[in-house]
View 1 (cartoon, rainbow, N blue to C red):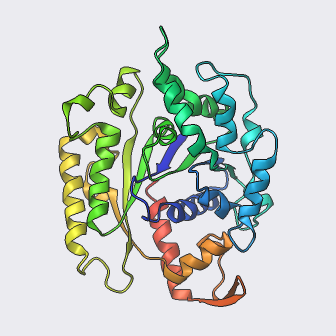
View 2: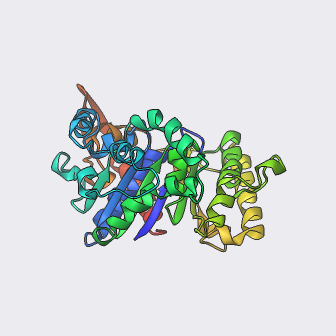
View 3: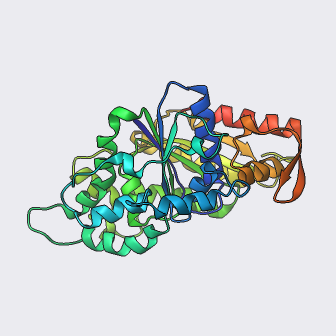
Length: 339
């Protein structure tokens, strides 16, 4: 079971839309592979996309999954674990999984999802308190990190790939997810805050360039390594939302070049944190999806299922250009070829 996560600790990088399109394209290209999606984000935007988007009332479908007993979301699973934080309870993983194709015919049938949940924000303080509790003979922090491991271990025979969409933070629930993935996909943008976000990601996950020695013993990497667990590896950095018409040969090129230089330096110094050995193999440029992306997002529709021409979206007819749609599809295909 190979596990990927889309994450950046900066919001607005197109992480969720890239995750949605990539997962759907990957699933349709490999129909014999069983795919589990885990939405570890309190906004649950990825879940709403899979369940139909705005047009097909994906939000209402999500509310229905939150209303069943047990709550069929990541928050529902974590709520169960709050009652048994340091030992694995008896549970059925199927209670927390949704088949999105049943409500959204655009979604491949080999995808299942654990829906996101705003409960994560309410649960995070309790989870963090438990993780830092002092109990003799118990590594409380790794016990909390293992909540998701317990779930994935139970379902390992049912799925071949896991894709996670993570909140743009380093909250306790984000750490739980990162502790249980093999590969990281980091979407970024052509701005200086995105460059800092990449640097911050390496500090938060791998403990590099920490601002003070006081963080050296209790950072994420140190705790994972002391528990004899493996850190994830950076698999792909997607320079996303580059302007459609100017490309990276524009005013953005300086920032993009600096991001590439930063990654190249990290790759040279810390090759063990990457799945690639050449920076050219680990960075992709993706232009803004523009109108095509807006329509796909509103309809909960992968690009390979989207029609061209005038498409009804919430009472308006929006034109999807065939050339732009093909370009968007081609760029997603380029991403899945790296997976």
